[in-house]
Length: 351
Image (cartoon, rainbow, N blue to C red; front, side):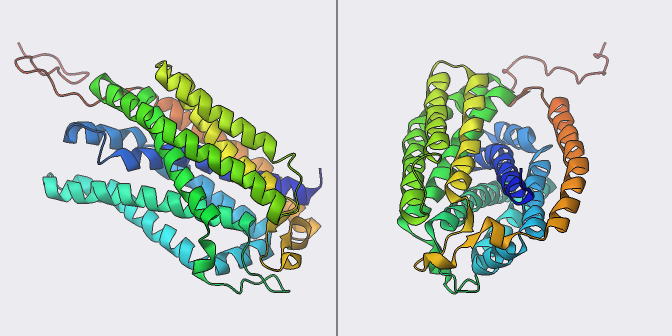
């Protein structure tokens, strides 16, 4: 495989991994104000993503670094043209990071409520803007003959890109709810299952609508045939259908697998629709950035390919080990009145 194509595919894989992993912890964040019955259950929700959320964001860092190294022209145009959007995402992610650290600094209900909402707003806002930004790569933004962005922030907002943002938010919320059904037990798990069932139809309808519109945009604005974009789009819609079926039948593990596949296939559909371009220019299609035109020199691609072959397996092994260590279900149930509180593990019961 040509190294330029290899790195385009690898960047798509990195974005797919980011949507899969960050998707469920964004989803958990979105549900914080609405799903738990009390503060103890809310703390348990934080605990389900506490050990892994920062590792999930590594996929975004690597995707950005890979784009900078492999496609510097794409990186420069995208980061300059989408500057305000990316700055907003950065601010939302910072607020979200602070919510994990600062929430525990006080037992005050008001203090904890502020950081709970900070996490929720950061999760919704970042998901929405990521959907809008990535969809704009395909729908088209104003580029000049040098491949430089000449539009404004408002050019990112179209009917299609806004639908993409809403679809990402709903699919992530559904994904987060199914994640909680495999990471919690007791009443909190039951509440997560009900939330997943409530979100499932909306995620299916909006997500499938976005996938279908993506195929239409690829044909209309990127000079693509219906195939191959229709293949990952159909698979993504099928994954959402299966997720709805599985969550209705209380097959939590299979439902989570299906929402994970749906999140990955959203990205796959976008990148399949985008190739062989990395940014579509509108209204002047001839100014679009292509994979070959935006790529680094062959020697650079060869060197970073060797580095990736060494580093990526280490990252995957470490992250897999992290998820294995923190695989145990958590509960957020209050002890029943009149029953003694169980002693912590390793502590001898009082005589």
